[in-house]
Length: 363
Image 1 (cartoon, rainbow, N blue to C red):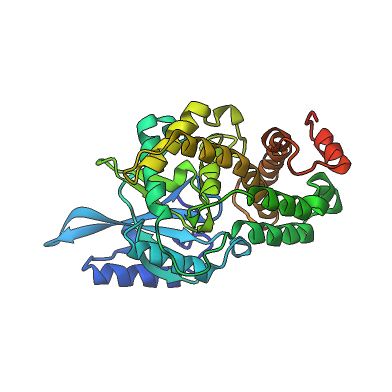
Image 2: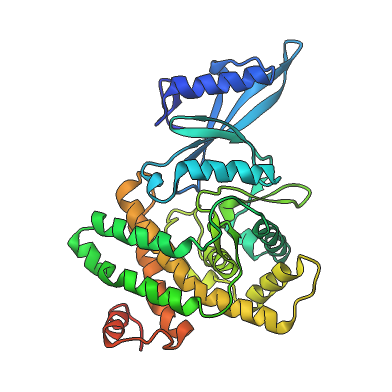
C-alpha cells in the first residue's frame, strides 16, 4: 500500500488531489466516499511515483463495481530532464491519435490518467517471440505519428545539456570518475560518426522498457509513459529497447543490468524484420542488415544518455534506486563497446586509449 499522510498520498497536497478526484467522480455519477479509497503504489517507475486509486461504484445503492484511475506524482527534480508543459502537450496529442491513456486532470504535483486495464509486461516477456513481434509492430505505428514541435533529433542537444548539469552537481572526484570533462567532445564525435549514413528521424518513445508496454486479453499492445518521447532516429529507439532487455526493475537489485540478457543476433533480426514488415512490405535482407548495424551503433548513444540520466538522478531524485551505480554500468558499457562497434572510426586518440584502458577495455 502507499505511504500516507493524513489519509492520503505522501508528497501531494491532499486537498488539490481530493478535489480533482471528487470532480471526476461527480462527472461520472459515482458516489465518492474518501473512506473507501484504495491506494496502491505501482513499482517499477524511476522518474515519477505512480499509484492506482480505486473506489466503489454503486447502482441503486448497491456496490457492484469499481472505478479505477492512475495517479502520477512527478518525481522531484524530473523537470531537469524534460519540459513538463511540453510533456503534457505530447501526452494529450498522443491520446488524440488513439494511443495510450487519456489525461483526466492535473494538480500541482502530478496528474490523473485513465487506468489501462491490461497487464504490464515483465522482463522475461520481452524474450517471447510473439510479444516481441507485437512490440515491433506497435513501435512502427508509434513512429508514424505526426506530432507538433521540432522534427529534428533531440538526442544530441539534450545530452549536451545534461553534461553541463552533471558537471554542476558532481563532486570533483565523481566528475573525474565519469570523465565529464571529455563527455561533450565524445558526444560531438559520436554524433558526427552516427550521422554519416541516412537516418530516418521519427517520433520516438525513447524509454521503451518492459514496464512501459502493456498487453490486454486480445493481445493488443499499448505503449505508455511519454516523458522522454521526441523526434530521434529510428535506430536509436530500437537500440534503447534492446538495451532494456538487460534490465529487471522488479528484483532486490533493480539497478543491476545483465548484458547477457541483451538480445542475440537472431532475436534482433526477428525484431527488425517484424518492425520493417509491419507496414505490409517484406523488407530486403540488406535493409534488415543495415538497420541492425545502425541499431548496434546507437546503443553507444543510449548508454551515454541513460548514464547521464542516472548520474543526475542520483543527486535530485529520492526514489529508492541506486542511480549512481546504474550510471556507472551504462558508462562502462559505452567504453567497452565503443571500439568493438566503431572499430576506430572515431579516430581514437592516445587520450581515448588511456581512458578505455582505465575502464578495463582492451585496445
